[in-house]
Length: 88
Image (cartoon, rainbow, N blue to C red; front, side, top):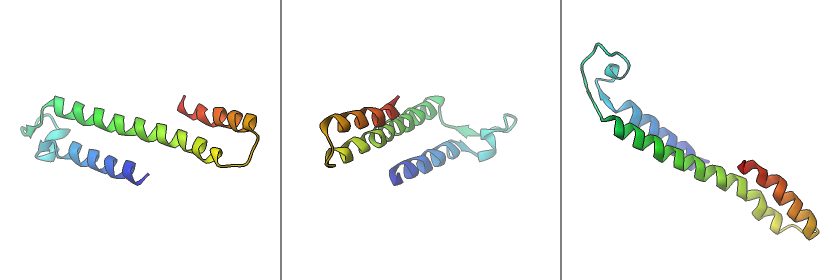
């Protein structure tokens, strides 16, 4: 969770730092120096990949915990399937 928070903070900083002066980011009448749109797209893709990775990690954690419980194998499989639906 901390990794996701830190990466989101980094994304916000990267987005706010893309134009000098900052007002040129949202006011089209002000002339300023801004990064290429490709940089913004690359930052968005990196953030999306981080979000997907954390989503799969969070969806898979219950399955790892279920392995160590003393339950019937059929019950473990059923619970793993139900909790794995979080991936969808």
